[in-house]
Length: 119
Figure 1: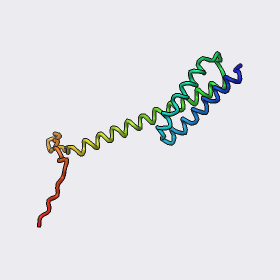
Figure 2: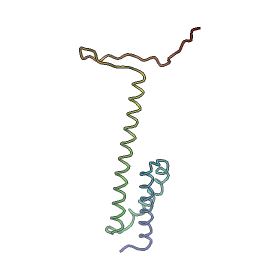
Figure 3: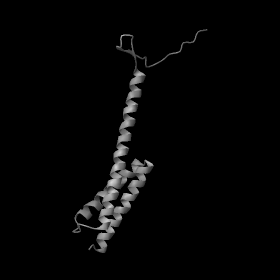
Figure 4: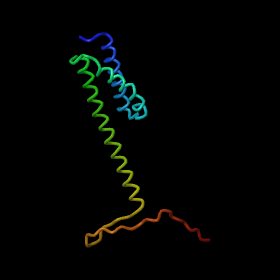
């Protein structure tokens, strides 16, 4: 059986995990980083408890797994954006095409375009 103090720790962690989920869903990465110290402290305290099985702990585990899946998806999205931005930078710096023989040809693109006015 868990004590009131143990239940309070578990409840606090559940609340942090719910806030973390809300931040993930909203894409608020700054708020996520501010939650890390509190989350680590609570997890450390719960790990020190002598309770091995509890419905509350099972709920916390499910929420943590749910948030981990959201974190993985967010990280994957960030990697996709970084990859796309790198591709766009590459496209701005060079132009590539395929010739009739199927060989790829790359051409450097001028970085500064100049307009010349004539009277």
